Every structure is written in structure tokens, then in C-alpha cells.
Amino acid sequence: MDLKQQIDRNSLPRHVAIIMDGNGRWAEKKGGERIFGHRNGVESVRMVVEAAGELGVEYLTLYAFSTENWNRPRTEIDGLMALLTRAITNETNKLNKNNVRLLIIGNVTDLPKSVHKQLMQSVEALSENKGLTLVLALSYSGRWEITDAVKKMMADAASGKLDPDRVDSNVLESYLATAFMPDPELLIRTSGERRISNFLLWQLAYTELYFTPVLWPDYRKEHFYEAIIDYQRRERRFGMVSKKSGALLNH
Ligand code: IPE
Ligand code: IPE
Ligand code: MG
Image (cartoon, rainbow, N blue to C red; front, side, top):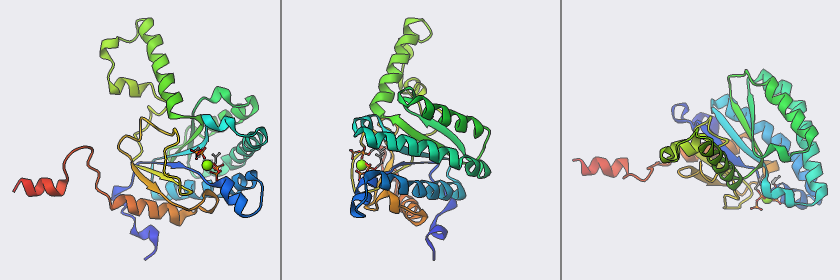
């Protein structure tokens, strides 16, 4: 049976997050510059966006550029920014046809002005769509996001809009860049690395983690289906006891 048919449509993750990693190593294996890997990663993005939309996943968050990635060589950063603008601009029509809504999370004021402008135009053009919500994490890090939330909370406390005694995890959550969506049920990281690298630190508290050795430019729909099937075999407990052992105890 093909992989897609093995997926239980009634227990899909609502939100899948992906750390798209391994572009540099992919390029190196082929004897090319790192940017060659990034360029080939665009097709993988296309494929997972399509796959997620077809399945009926509601939110797909892609880690495209981290706060720490600003420390890479200038030429790589410039290449990535140019690629990003081009890809978004070229894909907007197709995303629109597929009813995809686009949102950006991250410290977007750090992006070059022209990139920021292009991105906002695409976000605006796709804002009424009701299908998959594609969230691009750009100049994003979990620590940046939490720090930013705390800053905003302190400003609201100082102006009397927020009572510090009322602050709990729900209030803090409402200040995060991701406040509009549920936490991811599934995190996928490609390229064999087994770390979070400052991605959704708060939101990943109870997320199922899935690591695959596949390098991002080789990532295709089947790999995405495999990750979802693996997720569906797991039992999520959220700190409670197993439903199975709970049933045993009750008898
Ligand atoms: C992921 O691939 C893309 C970005 C971080 C922008 P890398 O560029 O990190 O590739 P590797 O990890 O060096 O192979
Ligand atoms: C994480 O990958 C960031 C993105 C995929 C955008 P990195 O390649 O930057 O992370 P490390 O250096 O392996 O931790
Ligand atoms: Mg990497």
C-alpha cells in the first residue's frame, strides 16, 4: 500500500513544524557551493507545502533562517535573501491557487528592506485564503521570541494594561509570535542532526520529535508521509499515565 494511504486522516497533526537542514552538506556532496544546496531546497519546500495542504494539515511552520544564521558569511546570507525573495514572489500565484495563507514569524525588521517589502506583499495577497497556513520562521529564534514577549509584557505592565499578578502561561503565550496557532504536534528535522537549534522553544514542550538523515534538498512527499505515519503510531501522554495502563488500573 502506498504511504499516503496508510495515513489516518482522522488523527492528523494540526500543526507540523520542520527544521529544514542539510543544504550545505548536500551541495558539498555534489561539489557545489552552499547556495547550490539552498537553491535545490526550494523544490523540497514546494513538495511539503503541497503534501501538507493535500492531507489537510492546518499549519506548517518552516524554519528558513535563524537569528544565529546572520553570523554566516555575507555571500551566503545575500544569496539566501535573494533566493527567498525570488522563491516567494514566483510561488505566490500557485500558493494562492492552492488556497494557502502565508504568515511570517521572526524579527523581520532585521531583514533587508526589499526582502521585507516583497514578503509583506505576498502575505497580504494570500491573507484571505482558508486552506493551509504556511508559517515561515525568518530571522527567528525561540529565545528572541520569548525575550520579545517579556519586553512587550513589561511595557504593558508599566502602562497599566497588564496586571503582573494575572500573568500565567496562557498570558505569556498570548504575547508569542505564534499566539494564533496551536503548538506543533510533530517536529521534523532533516540531515541527521538531533537538536532544536533555538526553534520553537516554548511551543515544543510536548511535541513529538522526528529526526531523519535525509538532507533537505532530497526531501520529498514520501518522507513527509513517513514522518506522519510514525507520529500516528506514538502515544502522547502529556505527563499523565498511559491510557493503556490507566485502563488496566481501573479494572
Ligand atoms: C539549512 O541548511 C538551511 C539554513 C540554515 C538556512 P544548512 O545551510 O544549515 O546546511 P548544513 O547544515 O550546513 O548542511
Ligand atoms: C537551524 O539549522 C536553522 C534552520 C534550519 C533555518 P542550523 O544549521 O542553522 O543549526 P545548527 O548550526 O546545526 O545548530
Ligand atoms: Mg545546518
